Length: 75
Image (tube, rainbow, N blue to C red; front, side, top):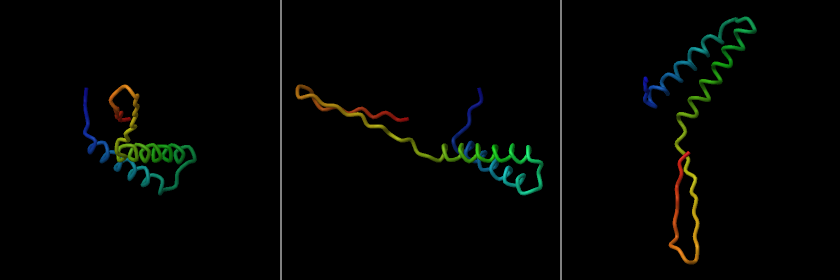
């Protein structure tokens, strides 16, 4: 299995965005324009996802008879 670093994936997403924007700058048939528009949007979504830090959900509970506890789950 091939693995990639987050930095490699971010660089690849930037390159895909640049290429798709270049392709969309020219005159295209409607189907090709749609295909490149989808490619561009997918690359932007991937990049946004990669650049977002992990968000933590904090779940806390307590009972009068127990110590207070806290559980942090990353998503």
